[in-house]
Structures are given as C-alpha cells and as structure tokens.
Image (tube, rainbow over all chains, first blue to last red; front, side, top):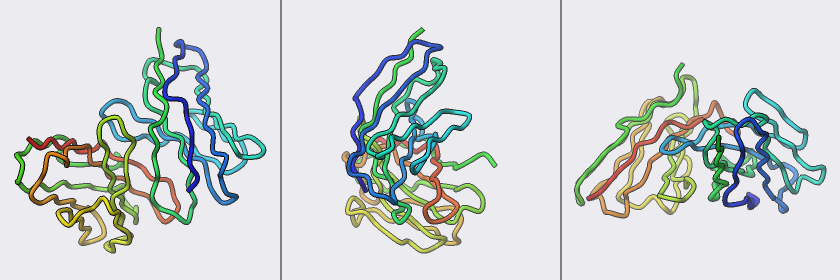
Length: 110
Length: 113
C-alpha cells in the first residue's frame, strides 16, 4: 500500500470549513483513499473513501486531484465535536489490513 | 444494529497474568480484524478472520497472543503472561466481505502493572 503524508496538526474555527490535506504520490491505479477519524479514547470512525471521483456524504467531502497524488478531506462546517485525529489511508481492495500513519490532529476552537 | 462491541472496555492486570478480550462484530459481517494502538501512534494490524478461518497474522502477534473466532461470529483475543509492553488499546473491526469498509469498535484499553 502507498504511503501517505499528512500535517501533524491543524486548527480550525468553529463554523468554518476544515480542509485536511493528504499526499499519496505513490498511489496505484487500484488503490482507494480512505479517511477515518479518532476522537480521544474511542475507536476509529469511518468517514469517507474514494477512488478517483470526488465523493460527498453526510459527514464530509473528499476531493481527489486528477493525478490522484493528493486529496483533501473537507468538513464544511466544523464543530467542537470534530476535534479528533484524522487518518488518511491508501488501501488496495486486494489487501484487508489498514495501515495507519500518525494522522492530523485537528483542533476546532470556539 | 449498534455496531461493533468490545468487552471489557478497560482491563488492569498484573504482569504475568492472562487476559482475554471479546469482540462482537456487526451482524452479517464475515470479516473481523484485530488492531493494537499504543499512545501517540495509529492502530497497527494484528490479525483477521474470514468467518472462523484466521487468514493472516502480523509479526506483532507473538506466541503469547492467540485469537479465535470459533463460530464465525464473535472473536476473542487472549494474551498469556502479560508484559508491561502489552499495555495498549486493542481494537476490533468488522467488514461485510473482502475489500469492504471496516467499522471499528470502541476498543479495550489494557494496562499491565
């Protein structure tokens, strides 16, 4: 699975959009981009995933660049409850283990 | 369905004791995974099952660790002769089938004194 690079930490004001970047320059054609988040002392929570098209669900939007070498997770209106560590994972559907990095610690402030 | 459940949520034990954790996956999910997470790190894969068959084990899973899923439903993870280095959050996840999204439980936090 391709390696991902994320900033260690980010801040966002409540009510604003939080844009979390992820670089995955070695991604292969059959590898998906997955996003999970982990609120303190809880299990990781699935957010969204995509292959090459942009995706949106009730939690977030995922924007994948045309060359697929990077992506951005967008939380359109961040709340204090969105404070968490966000993990970007590149995963082949032929592999069943998720390889987590250290993620981005997002702090939403009032 | 309320998702993946894990018991106990917290376990404190003395070095050398055996501990067992239980994971109940989402109903109808054929795949079940165990991960371990230490402080400040992301979760690390330990092992996974397709129904009752254990298909892969990480090198992290030493001989003191054993996982089972006897009837293809719930799973147990046992650690024998615990060591202080086993202190971690043990996470369970399940997915409907190969390649599907994994959903995690709340984890069991183990503290070895």
